[in-house]
Structure formats: structure tokens, C-alpha cells
Length: 452
Image 1 (cartoon, rainbow, N blue to C red):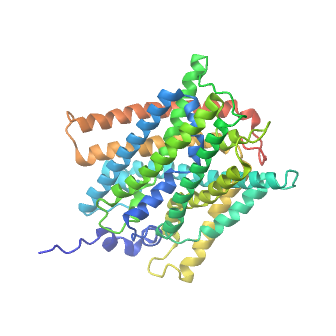
Image 2 (image 1 turned 30 degrees about the horizontal axis):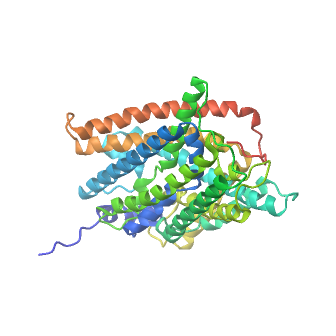
């Protein structure tokens, strides 16, 4: 006789008094929706920095570190999904990273540690997405009107206005179609950039190629750890439990399928962008490969329309990325401000939602305009934030939940990852702070020149 479908205990016990869960983290999604959300959270314009990351490592170490990072993060996210599934079967379905960590590790301070790191990462990405989108608009504008009067902060204001409108999508699940579009856009601009790099590398204006590393050993070591931090930040997301929360219960097995979809896209985009960009520019690769294709001096190394279309695709995807990483903030706001007993679109809930989300986006837009050197700051946040959330806590949560024997291979693999990536994170943080100090003389509030 078939078993009746298992009811979601969280839905029964808590959703009737938790507006953040009932509204923002609505559990209606299928596995492919989780794949769309994950891909948007991981596969973004930061992949255009991969040739620059290879510049600090060279071909062999670059391939090795990129592959290791892919394997470790997939394993890490797989373990976390298993912990979430185990808790759900045990009658404790967790839809927030902070609650999962506090429950499994049995520590109240862990709740606040996770929410602090998550807030720093998510707000940082929100600010960075608006800044980069504004920069994309500025690039398009400067090509159409080289002597035009508009400055970077004008474009940031335009982007902020669009983000305010988009922020009114009420639930994470309601972003599924946008995030599918985001997946297609990431493939689109990757293929355009790869094609542009191949064109540049085979043209008569192809730049001379030099793949040598820094001559000074100290500088070489710092560059290597900065590159590793870039890899960690690119593969990180820090919101996997919230993404898994959007799945209709039971979530068993669905997240793994979503991860497989996401990593198939990662394989196609990350490797092709890294290899083609580093092959053409070598150790002269810019931190954004589009800037290498459009040098300040000399002719463009690729057809202008190709680079322009890639910039438009990047611009459009940045809106989706900003929305995805805002969901944790919106969930916290909704939990405190909304009345779950009234409808999601009732006047009582709609007005606070519009006001609070608008204020949050304005906050991010203001800091994007004020701190155009935010790339350097975000590198520090990335190195110190993604490492504990994506490389340390999942292993720790798995060991605490499933308690593998200390003599087992799984236990020691997990502990080794914790130790190695904690060390790499500390070194990466130190390297990022060093770069922040080196660039400090270029910093200027509300400048039109982006640093970092």
C-alpha cells in the first residue's frame, strides 16, 4: 500500500506565524527552479575575472586550483543539502542558514555569526551588482556619446530605480523565470567573450603573449593567494539553505539535481572564459577581460558590436543577481514587519514591503555611488565571508549531524578541507587587505573611475 505524502512539519508548525517563511521563502519550486537560482547565485560576471586569476597562478596551477575549487564546492553544497534533508526527515525542516547552523552546532552565537557573515556578503553583492550595472551603462554611453555630461553616479541612480521596481517581486520562487533568463544570459556573454578572445588572438593586432609569473617570490605568493581568493569568491554563494527552502517538500534529491544543472553550466562557462582570456592576454590580463578587449590605447581587439552585446547581457544579468542576494534581507524584513494572518498582497503587508525594500535598495545604490572602489572592499568581504559559509560550516555540519567515525575517510576529508581552506581564507584576506592598501591613493568618493 502506497504511503501518504509526508507533510512538511515546518509548514504545519511555524509558517502560520512566520511571514518571512510563508511569503519570501515560499516552498513551491521544482529541482530545475533550484538550478536556476543556484546558477544565478554562482555564474555571474565575476567569471570575466578568471583570466586575471590565472595570471597569478599560471596554466598548471590555474587549472588545478579551478578544478579543485569546483570539486570541493560541489562536495560542500552536496553535504549541506544532505544535512538539510536529514533535518527535514527528522521533523526539523530548516529554511535559513543561520537556524540550521545554530540547531546542529547547538550554539546561539552561531546564529548571529552566520547572519552577520550572510548580511555582509549579500549586501556587498547587492552594492557591487548596482555598481557594475552602472559601469556597464557608462561603457555603453561613453561609446555612443564620448563627451556626454553624464557621470557614473547618474547611471548608478538609473540602475537603483530599476532595482527598486524589480525588488517588489514578493517571493524567492517568483524569480524563477528571471533566473532562467539569467542562466541563458551567462551562457550568452560567455560565448560572446570567448569568440571575441579567439578573434583577438588570431588577428593581426594580437597582443604579445607572456605567461611568466611575477619575478619576486613575495609578490608571486601574494598574487597566488589573491587568485585563490578570487576562485573562492566566484564559486561561493552562502545562501544554499534559502535556495533549498524554495523547493516543495519533500526536498530529498531535488537539490542534488539542481546542483548538477548548475555545475554543468559552470563547466561550460568557467573553463572556456578562463582558457580563452588567459591564452590571448597572458600575464597582461585585466581584472575584467572586457577591458583587455577594449584597450585604452590602440584599436579594439574584437568587433565593437560583440563587446557591446556582451556588456548588455552582463547588465541584464546583474539585475537578477542583485535580486537573488537581496532575498535574505527581504526575508528578515518580512519576518519582522508583515502579518502572516493577512494576505501577501493585503494593504497591511504591501505598504511596509514597498517602503522597506525601497529603502534597502536606495541604501545599496548610495554606497555603490559613494564607493566606486568597492571592488577592493568586496574582495576582503569575499575572502572572509565565503570561506566560512561555503568551505568550513558545511563540513562541520555534516560531521556533527552524521557523526562519521574519526577513522573514516569522510571525516578526514572534511577536516582537511576545513583546515586547508581556513588557511587559504586567512592568506586571501591578508592579500586582499594588502591590495586595498596599495590602491588607497586612488580612492575618491563619488568618483567616476572604478577601482578594483
